[in-house]
Length: 428
Image (cartoon, rainbow, N blue to C red; front, top):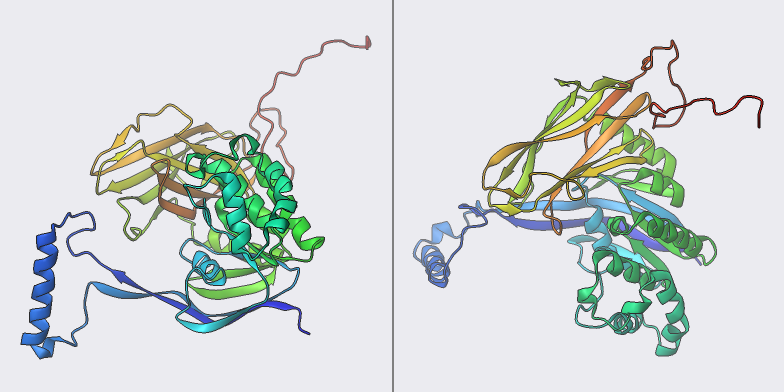
């Protein structure tokens, strides 16, 4: 008997994108809709030649195209790729949330998916009720769920809120309970998207350990999507890289993440990068510039100051916008995360216009090496624009303390000036 649990053959998924000619945010009345419908029908029947004219407001978009791979029982596989590569679409098809346009998939065993905050939860039901609901969806009996119940609650750390409707949970509580349910109710295949990034660092570490145990000790299959290449390398044996809906590389986790990181750095060698407007977003980043010591540049020396200038555009006014970025090492480790949510800023409301935001990091204590930077823009609850590996820059070594010594090593962060002085000599 074959130990293949997931087989994907020539899988493709097509979406039809509608383009609003007068803007997505234009309000229409019922009269407008009815009038437009009648005009459309009259045009087709009174002028048959127009029936086959393509609609310029509709466009085909292939989120996946001819994707093929197979995964064996007990494998831990990472799925990586830039935003829009097709990762989420692939997971939704594997989770049977959406159907493929062409191709076929074969899955052996029960699948538990955690694709976004609250996946599979009914907001009006309590945490306790949702645990039993999710177990029933997976085909488990009440006795089986009860046997795992305490373990799930202890892992999620939500005992005090078990009888509270989950619509009142914070995003972190939602994710903790959703992951605990997905990982403990014994699915043969566990699919986890980047949603774990909502949780705190300690919980993320606990989740990584649980996914490793699920695969190694219980021989269950794990599919893990993440932008954190260090997490992919830590958890996964192999990885699949997607780009523009196609499979670019299938290999070990290390060789695939190395290829992915090298492509990201190659694509962002300019100090200023412009970005296309995302589909149906009222607020987006038009361009970003790296500024080192007051000059636009992709190179800075140890001890130099670093700023990011971001040009944005907005169709509507956005209250309490949140803008931030993450700096990654060349190995894909996230080493610095900054956003205005936790800091004082004057970004109370972005009006319906374009403008520029300056993010001033001051002096960044980074060692020699190449770093990439991802940007994101949201209102605190909804992401409007996420740009992975949007920019890259290089830190060059120098004698920053004037003592003739240059800091070296394999770490990313530099020990910044510290007061070392002798407390005693020959007295201890």
